[in-house]
Structures are given as C-alpha cells and as structure tokens.
Length: 113
Image (cartoon, rainbow, N blue to C red):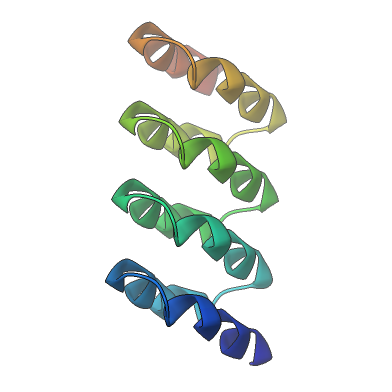
C-alpha cells in the first residue's frame, strides 16, 4: 500500500539493515511503519527487536523508545514485556537504568502476572 512508498524515503538514504527490515514492514500494520523512524538510526539490537514489535501490541511500540538507547539486557527483558500487562511496561523505567540484578528480578514479575 501507500505507506510503503513513504517508507522508501528512509530506505534510500540508510544502511542495509533498513533495507532488510522492509521485508517485515511491507506485510505489517502501521505501527511498524512508525517504528522505522527509530530503527533507521539505531544499532543492530533494534533490528533484532523488530521481530517482536511486528507481532505485538502498541505497548511494545512505546517500549522501543527505551530499548533503542539502552544496553543488551533491555533487549532480553522485552521477552517479558511483550506478553505481560501494563505494569511491566512501567517497570521498565527502572530496569533501563539499573544494574543486572533488576533483570533477574523480572523472573519474579513474570510469574506474578
């Protein structure tokens, strides 16, 4: 559809990871198109993260604003966020700025939900 045409303006000036990403965008909903604005300027961890975003609800799209600028443990944390309720999304504000013991704590949060 027409949103793919708009997306090409990004693809044409970005690195190869964005071009590979279009294979997902072309068959997904509009939330993925909005997500590309972040993807185009971020590191490879975001590209891997898109596999989750493309099939998940809007809370994951909001969560990407954190993932894109944080370290690898946040990417691992998304496996919990994608299938859990909204208070986990709020919890990520702590995870993103704390040390590794917070990541271990998510194993508890996941089972309490």
